[in-house]
Amino acid sequence: MKPSIPILCYRNISPVCGIPPGEFRSHLEWLDAHGWRSISLEQLLDYLKGGPPPPPHSYALTFEDDYLDNWVHAAPLLREYGVQAAFGCATAYLHDGPRRPDAATPDADLRDLPVARDAWGRAIERNDPTAFMNRAELRALVEEQGHGLFGHTHTHQACFRAATPLDAAPGDIHPGVHGIYLEVRNGQPMYPSGSAYAHNGFWPAANDLLDHQLIARSTSERIEFCLNEFTLCRERLEEVTGRPARLMSWPWGEYDDVAIEAALLAGYEGALSMDCGANRPGTPLFAMRRVRMQGGTGPRELNRLLCVAANPLLAGLFRKTYRRPRA
Image (cartoon, rainbow, N blue to C red; front, side):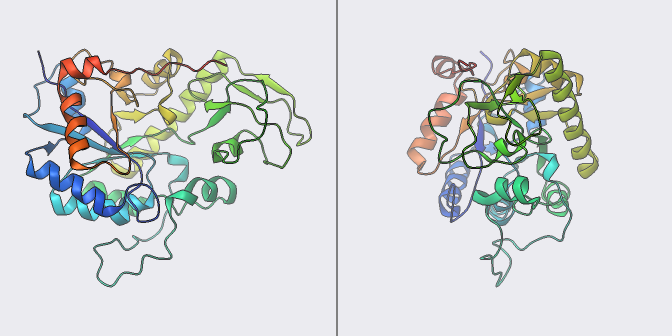
């Protein structure tokens, strides 16, 4: 039985949200001490497609959403421990600017840097993407530090997946809703939301802010939308790195056959999901499985997660695949 290669999925590494840098350091320290070695997503993809197996105790490490704190707090620790990682980018928020200081910069004052908890609101509502990494930082990660990038769509767009209003507007509305309504106002009805790539969805019938009528999008309209988004994302990543962008990841872990077909047409060879299970030859290339890393994960739990994900039999027992929620 061919081995399974775990993929760890992180988002924020920050003292103010997500996983604290000290806790992330403890993960890297444990992995290094117990003989785990990182490989690139491309090497893992080639293995899933029938290539040679990576060395024993191999794993891949990914970061979702391209937050600035990945540059500030995660990248210095990755350098220290010699770990290779890959970063997922929503390319609508790529921007230019100088490299900002990281936690390894002597006497750096990091207090005024934008943080991840404000990233989507700043970018979507105020057209300020500076809580995400800029092109100079991404190029440095790839060209100087040996990391990789993967696509995370162009705009990371949400949709309303059902037309039945919620009883009350949720207190914490995902900023992606701002891409559905032209302007989010008090008193507007809210509906169950989901990925605009995995659901045809329901959208405002008019640009009139007082018109709350929704219309359903057709499958052909979604295919066109997905193909445009996925292609733009791939092309913009390739402009940054000068290398083929072979992989993408599904926003919110949601996908279906329509989205997969569009990803294939856009030139991707595989996609990262949030499914649980084994990564070995025979794993669906557009549903590569990952281990979700959350705050409070100590070495004992990390060991358990890796033991399950790296064992094809155990990973099969604990397999969990995305299923579309009911409308």
